[in-house]
Image 1 (cartoon, helix red, strand yellow):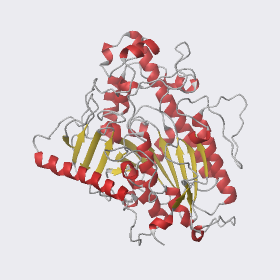
Image 2 (cartoon, rainbow, N blue to C red; image 1 turned 135 degrees about the horizontal axis):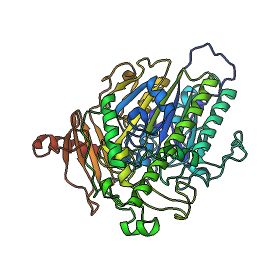
Image 3 (cartoon, rainbow, N blue to C red; image 1 turned 30 degrees about the horizontal axis):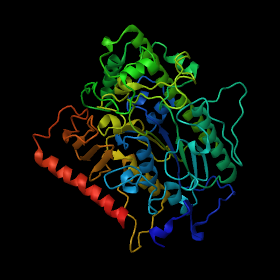
Image 4 (cartoon, rainbow, N blue to C red; image 1 turned 90 degrees about the horizontal axis):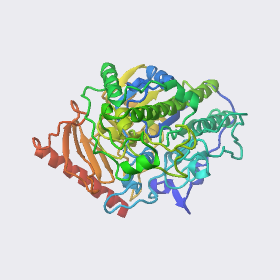
Length: 543
């Protein structure tokens, strides 16, 4: 059977050959060896340095525990934006290669038939797959091979509001009713994930599972439970400049980075943001348009901004608490030891400042259901410490993500760092490696090879995973990294691509020392490789 026959798309739905129809056994054989389970937890717009184990002051004890008993990757990359990262994560391809992001000659659209989602690729080994939370991929989760799913496409949680969505209900799953407790999407997503695990334990205890838990936190709007906000009441009063320096010192001591602190860039504002005047009119006098020096703010602005970051931190702390509940369920069902848990963020923190949905009620308490606030460029710069720029850009601040790997049965280098540069394109090869599933490639027209590498060798040794190069593009931003060299170009104010900048990432990951003029040959070579990749994408989509 060839790769193109492996998954067929009929009317938008994924169908599988009868050969691969496999049901779960309900016979319990706990003591027999099993393929490992995989739990992938994805945060949304969380900065590289937000969590404690990556140098932050945000309280994340469950992530810290996973890191202390597992590995932290220091050079893991996303695609810099929500939907490209998710497409790359679940298919193993760069988003533009499969029409999930734009390039000249490539429009956004549905994935080609040769790019199924990971759950479809896992079907042959009998793996059950579950999705909870944000989707943001073409088609539905069920069409992509998930056995159970709840999120945006089911009128469930919505990233425009955290308190207003409806509880979930499926044929054999129902949200728990908790008297007097307000609905909050982060809790509801964890509830659904736990319900899926309980269902799996009841029906398929000896079958491996892939669970994809995609939280909305801490994506805007800044909305959190008041009891969580109260934990950070005075934490951020000293401002983003002081927080950045504190984080950098901790990160350097941990060995996460060896570079200096990038400079604040007040001109780096997403083109779709509200103007300074609109922010003052619609949000109030406490809002700040740019990442300026903290000491230049008024007292009202300082108080307002400190509260915003407290809400951002509260959202992450609540997510961490819910992650702890999911982990407790794994332990209760005796699946914790043999489950690879991976945690990452879909991109860097966001400098966006917009208002969606039914607007912002400035008379309501900050962080409540009626407010619509965004983190903004000042605190986004701090969340991405020490890197440059934000979500949407392809500089390090936009594409660097934490990656924690925890697997008690196989990862024994506890509390260690891995400096291997890696990317979301590596997740599919990693999971397929664990599942011992090979995708057939004996067709006369096989699907393009996945560009990623399995990260399994890195679980035992630092430096064991090597890519020829890593590649990025998004909304006129672009980048390519080969070894220590990274070529980056950022979108200009007139929405065009600026000139290439060259950085030695081994010593200058904050991208402050542009070496393009000193090394024109390296710029030329990397430029040619970047464009050759685009041509390959175009060719594959036309055949």
